[in-house]
Image (cartoon, rainbow, N blue to C red; front, top):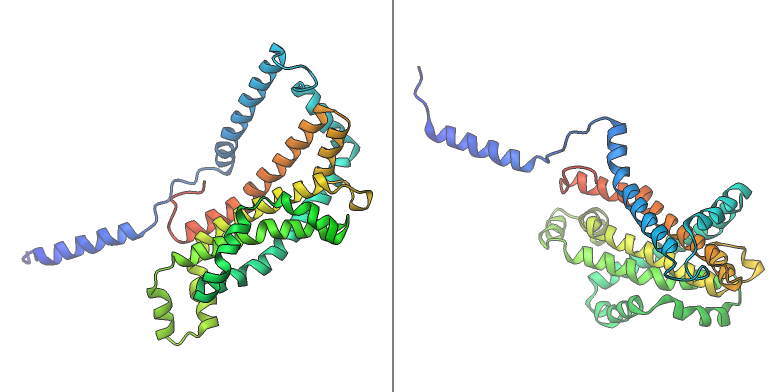
Length: 294
């Protein structure tokens, strides 16, 4: 029997242990149906609890009917929109504006964020202004946008841009600031130019943090759009969710107002679950930063 080399044994154990630490640990996948049920049950349960509390408060008559409608009346408003097909128009008018505004904001915010993160003079001069714009409620721009552009889509897109661009730019700056300095140095040593370093090193390394900025930018663009549609109402603009909410207020129809709030909330949650959550899980899983899809 050959003699046992304790040193080689220890080295092999250490290497095996380090390899195990580097390997992402994935929870058992399970069946597709089981994963869908596990993901859907918690939010459905929360919604059931909230509706039950709402029903109890309405039945107890703590507030008059014109202040707190019954859940069934709100559902009736939504069901009427579904059966008449009007809900598709409401969603289309608002969602396509939000997507276009967000896309334009992305085209503006990414170069702006790169400039702030990489050029000190830009960071000192424009960085505080961008942060200030992010803290400014976008609804404050609606009156000025109406006076500048009139009651048209340009006014609405202007408000969306001012709401989304600062958040996306600051999110990119935050992600870039967290990139280890060694990475761009290695890229430069390997011959990567400024543009190549940004494209192949900085942006991929900053992607997890940048995703947070994108989510926040979408939230700001959606809120800005709803504020613009709620205030800037005109037949030429079409009827979106904000206009529907405004009509409920004008008619003093509280069930219509609650239906509008629910539909706006549904779009926000839907975009989060269908777009940003899978994208975030994919990026984190690729980097071994999560053990299972959330």
